[in-house]
Amino acid sequence: QGDNRDTDALLNAVLMLCSVIKRKWSPRQREIIRAYRACGDQQRAADHLGIAQSSVYKGLKNASYYSYQSAADTLSRALREIGGRGDV
Image (cartoon, rainbow, N blue to C red; front, side, top):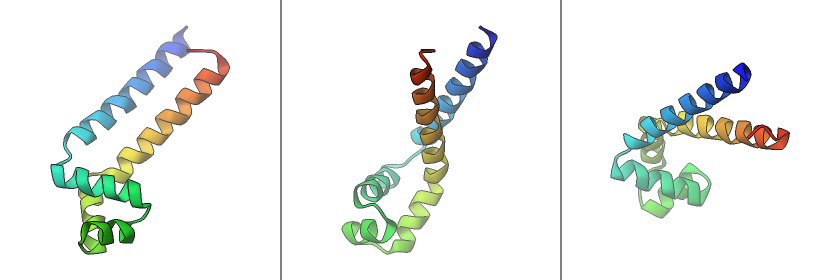
């Protein structure tokens, strides 16, 4: 039971951090992130948006996008593992 509480607390903390990062995104950062996700790389996102690749890079960096995505991916993997064990 204690391990489950620790796991729940850790997963909730990661989820809260993701939410905090995402809430700080400006409308322009959201637009860049959407284009990056849809296009698959910075140059294609830049071409789609009609801006320089360096602007996409800066938008993603200033939005802490890669930290957000890493945390979200880790959270997804952890939840899949928990679900696979029947601990949910």
